[in-house]
Every structure is written in structure tokens, then in C-alpha cells.
Image (cartoon, rainbow over all chains, first blue to last red):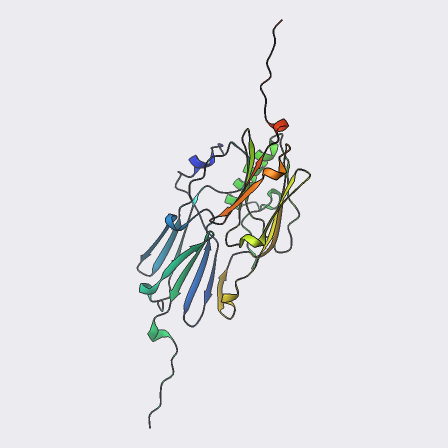
Length: 120
Length: 154
């Protein structure tokens, strides 16, 4: 593989898949995606039908001299998820904290278990 | 389920296209005369944050990917020319009681060490944690900086 300075490599359209944790509660889903080097300006979240795609563009980093040892990727992050139909897509919210995207996907009200009052 | 993204070259499985090319890449890096990186044995949790080491004429810059940590849980030390980065990523309590649908993120303790090829001025080392990336700048001592030597022709 040709060695290029980190900034040039970022121009290629290859993506890296961010690792995620997904939790489910009665109220909805919480998704955490690791995207170090991305802040909220670099985030693109799109919803198409019942599929959500998260894209994280890394902040460009100043090239510091010569790379002696490199394990990090320069590629941006991208991953798609198929949504549970119970999710109320209008209420999806996102926030970014130290390179972690936290996506909150609430379930729609009708789907939540509720008690039905019994009338005589 | 314990998924690790980065594999040491000797652990890369044949047939895993992407991992094989990563292994080739690392082999090429290790062919260079400078092999000062040391890695401590992976602890049981298997989490090894990715690291880049850069050098320019005045500094070494070490960049580590540590998303989702708190500043106080990251420990950076310098001892005898060896930089140590360690810490612990704790699980988030707010998800306790929730049903775990998918878990790929690694938690627990980690440690990486970098043996620096030239002396650095310990008191001038700075570290910054931003967007989940830890950047450590280690200025070289004056003696370690490259110098121009005049050639006298007699």
C-alpha cells in the first residue's frame, strides 16, 4: 500500500464501520456508535423509509511530520440500521460526546404496554 | 461475544481479506529500522486502542483513539523514555436494566506503551483529549533535534 500522509488518505471514499452498542428498554432504543475524531459538525444522519444511516466525517488533522507507526484509519465512518417499526421516527434524537454518537429512538406511544382499565 | 477490531499481525486469520492487508501493512512498518513500539500483552478484556506515532524535527506526537472516556480515567506517564497510556473505560450505568440488543464496544482496562527513539523534555509534554482522540505532544530535547553539520573542505 502506498504511504500517504494522513490528510490525503481521508479523501478516498472508503468507509470504516463504527462499532455500536444497542440497548432496548420499554420506552425505546439507545444506540451508541464509536466515531473518534468526529464532532457534531461532522455528523450526517439520514432516514430513508425504515432505515437510518449514520455517517461521521473526521475532523481534518494537521499532518505532524512523518508517520512512524500507524494503526488508525483516516477513513470516515458509515453504518446503516434497519429500524424496528415500533420506533417513532419523528422523535429520534442524537448527540455527540467525546467521539461517541448516542442516538435515542423512542418507541411510539401505541406500542408501549399500557394498562387497560376495566369498567363494570 | 468479544469482537476485537485490531489484531496483532500474528493473530490475523488467513482468508480475512481486510485483516490480511492490515497485517501486510504492519509488516511493512516493522521492516523499517525503527521498531521502538512495544505493546504490553493484551489483557483479558482485549481492548487495545489504536495509536499513531508521528515525528517532526521538534516533536514526537502520539495520537490514540479513546472514544467515550472521561478525562480522569485516562492516565499518561513518561518514564525512562517510555510513554505509557493506560486507563479504564467503565460501563455506563444508565443502561443497566435495559435489554442488550447488540454489543460490540469494548470496555475495561487498557494499556499501551511507546518506547521513544529519542529523548524528550518531560516537563514540556502536553496532552489533549478532544472528540474521543488523545493527542500527546512530546518535544525533543535540544540534543535530540537534528543538526546541520558544516562540512569543511580543506
